[in-house]
Length: 178
Figure (cartoon, helix red, strand yellow):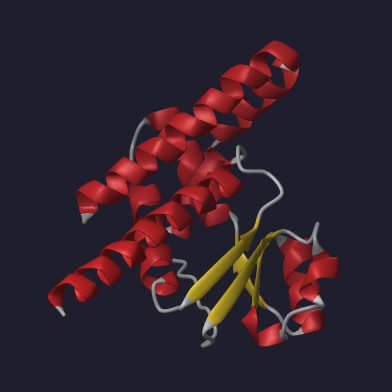
């Protein structure tokens, strides 16, 4: 399974690097600032700290994961116990006020930055493993992403693809055994 997680980590890294390369043509100063921040000691420290942070999600059959609070109007449609908001301090405070579950985004984002700048999978593999283990408990997961090329959105796209593939493989295996 470690090889599978390493492959997912590489795909996330490559997609994000591709996006940075495209952005370089339109906003070179933004890319330079991002690259500088990605290799800062604080980012490396947060990646290491993220090694010990596990997503703790509630028990429900369906889970709605929101990248930030940009689509907070949609959250009102679902039961609060089925919603997870992923982000930073602002999102944490919002989630707490509304009774939603919250997960920090920095463990994934910093792990991706570490992979892109240093080429090491350790932190990103760990985050993929933790999230896959936790998300595999749910019957249905819906991601609300506002950007699938930024680190967090890219991360959830690849984790979601993996979970979908695993679910389809298990269904196929069970039906062929019958």
